[in-house]
Length: 319
Image 1 (cartoon, rainbow, N blue to C red):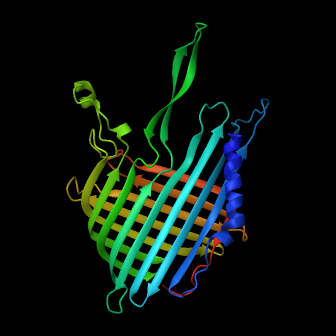
Image 2: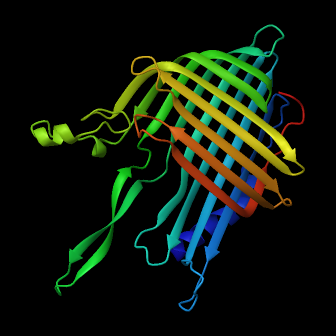
Image 3: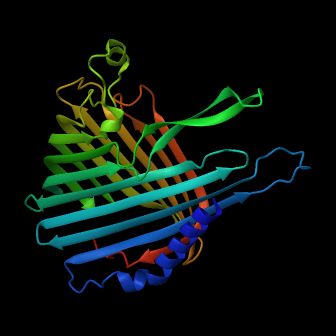
């Protein structure tokens, strides 16, 4: 555990030290790029005599976000990369636990219609995760000494880059500024890919066939699922108070071919607090509804204070 956290810390510090040299300067006014590297670290410790409750734990989160923007006459192209990864270790737990694991790329190409805020648009979205996810549980097992003890175990529920979502759509973009826009794509195709480790089923085994549940919507003995539908994506960012910014991202998707009334929802709320050039705080909230995965909302929340480093400068004029 210590080696993993030290590796994360070293990676973060290395990123801070080399980011300025590794990111080339943009020499044309048509291009703009900016981003940030952040590292959040949390630790709590209690000795055996502590009576107030609590469990010793340590965790670290590394996040990288980067934007690339191109603007020429009526043509605009906006691309945003978001990556977050975090691990935690709690005393007496056998396994490390993920606190966050996210990789997402969004790209929108727009061509302005007359002199309005409306644009013809093409969108691309990729979403996945870096490593496997697990369900943790405890089982009673009898050892060689004849004593029964609870044993911590885990069951793999998803894999590295499994599932992965690819989405491509044609539609219309309403863009007042880089911080206030939304896109409607009535012609959208989505591809979901998974590892065959989760979908392999012996078709000669009737029990296995009956027990199989589509893995993120992918049927038995397949590794992909194609969908055709409509999508919506809205984005806003504004200043709540001095040095505090709020970002809202809402993504909706409906599959025309299977239960179009069951709309997939992905909502992200981010609060950014700037303490100084290198210290920042942030709050992240994400809610996902996808009936191919589960019938309820998936909720993720991260809050922390840590180090950050800006990669480039945001453009000061409207894009």
